[in-house]
Length: 166
Image 1 (cartoon, rainbow, N blue to C red):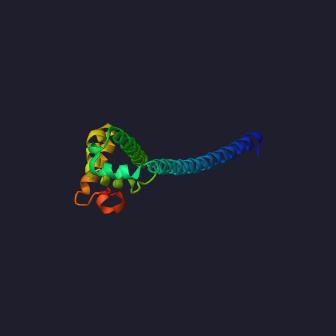
Image 2 (tube, rainbow, N blue to C red; image 1 turned 90 degrees about the horizontal axis):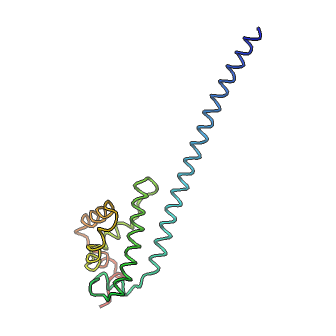
Image 3 (cartoon, rainbow, N blue to C red; image 1 turned 30 degrees about the vertical axis):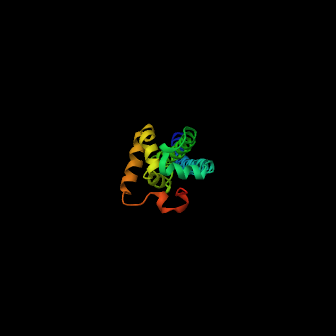
């Protein structure tokens, strides 16, 4: 074998090894991207859950139960308290829906529960005013969920601890 044939043989081996290295690198990067996406999904779900837990712990239960029956009948300060609470709750749900639409997690029962809440008379009053300020797709989504549950009772009539004290 002459010098030129040997060099060409080494070149062919080099190309083969290079092609194998490229395939191995692409496979490695694919695994890394998949793991990164899984971590991002888990982190998004965890952050949304933490926000929900933090927000739910802030509610004044008797005030919230009264708001479910008659939001407009609350004092201005109480309306503001409930408004801030509801905005936080619905923003968390909007985030969950957005993450789900991007493939970063599955929807929980949380948005349907909020949709059910919008059937309570007092929350209907609030949602009629504030609902349109949310992302239009999310507003439509909640309304469609609420309407698909039309024959169901509102959450305050299903779960006794949501009912206002009379």
